Length: 296
Image (tube, rainbow, N blue to C red; front, side, top):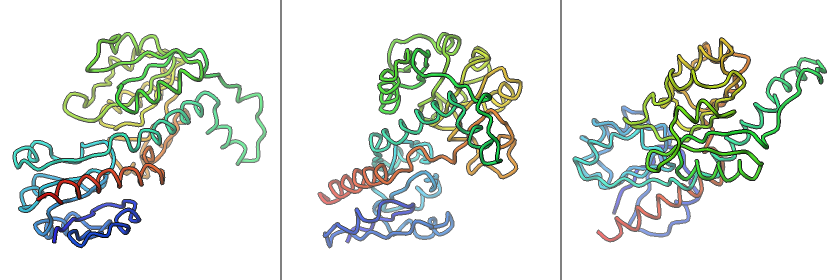
């Protein structure tokens, strides 16, 4: 029997449909870090999303671990250095959530341009401030897409369909510099993984180049941005507005200063939170685990 621990919420219907007595799926989506450390030695595979942290301690105690599956794209919650030392295989599903994150990013851009958040807020207070909410159109805007993987390319495709003028930055392709893109764009949308090369990559030097009429959107990882610099520039209205789905500290504390900025839209890291993305990601990872471990 091959034991597989599911440590985060996935699409359980995917594993319920598997009729293979060789595999036992132990579904514990609320498992605590302490419980994980106590039991990880019992499993050949571990499946996580972003909640569970696969630390050096987890890896050291996972004597039988052969595979770690990440439902989704980001691997910043997994100690990849220790994984490589142990030669444990890592599987993720980078394409499964690209449509979900793309749609959220586009939605946030449109919300900023059309002032949807503040418009709704005023209506819920019983007001009718039609003249106060004159917005802008996406067509014709210069949009800088920072990161050009699955999601960045998908976002660029939809932006182009809206008639936006897209420029993009990629670490693996020859593109305009970050400084050029930040200086000339009306909108910046970030789609970078978090790793040693991208941590705080979007710093005060870059953010200070943005136009006072421009908007900043981040649906990737909070750690790629110097949050204090972004906050200060938004507070001083040197950047017109921002929409953030990700933060350095998650969950965002109830008393966070971010919650008080009137020119910012906040969402609780819901980029990949669609039924379709979860189903696709779960199926991709589980199928691959079965394929690999089934051969052993």
